Amino acid sequence: MVVSDEALLERGDADAFAEFYARHAPGLLVFLVRRLDGQTELAADICAETFAAVLVDRRRFDASAGPALGWLYGIARHKLVDAQRRGVAELRARERLGIPRLQLTDEAIERIDALVDVRASALVAELPEEQREAVLARVVHEEAYEDIARRQRTSETNVRQRVARGLARLRLWIGEAP
Image 1 (cartoon, one colour):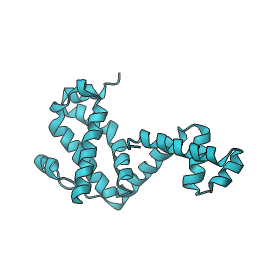
Image 2 (tube, one colour; image 1 turned 180 degrees about the horizontal axis):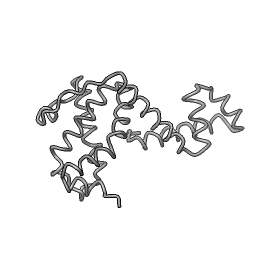
Image 3 (cartoon, helix red, strand yellow; image 1 turned 180 degrees about the vertical axis):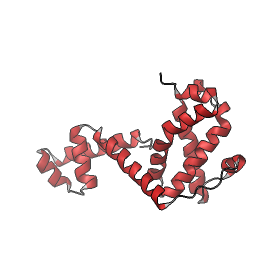
Image 4 (cartoon, rainbow, N blue to C red; image 1 turned 90 degrees about the vertical axis):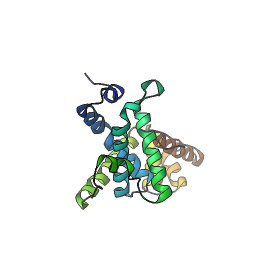
């Protein structure tokens, strides 16, 4: 039986936190890498900061205020804003716990980049067929709207709408504001 995120945070023990972390660290890392335009090391640092803050403040989580995933991403957004404002990731939560600064090897950076690519591919695959084809043609292959419209036997306006709707849906799925 799968235990809910909310129940894991409410349990508050090390095993529950480890499970919560394992469930959400990859997705949060992808979210942060995307928001930071590929700054993998900074994204990993902010991800660590976020989970350190969750660990420290887990008793403050209130399931009646909303889902645990929203709480996690809210903390991540705050850490991201702090990091962007000051140009470095906030160190307070990590220092309180005595967690050393994360040093990524080239291999670890490559694994994170691969995770981002796999996650993005999976999300694009979930788009409706017409939107998926239009987004891939325009964004990935950099084709002209006119060429896509000709191949899809539709108007250029329809192709623009498909691309816009597909990109909006992807942004929603990865948690970016429209």
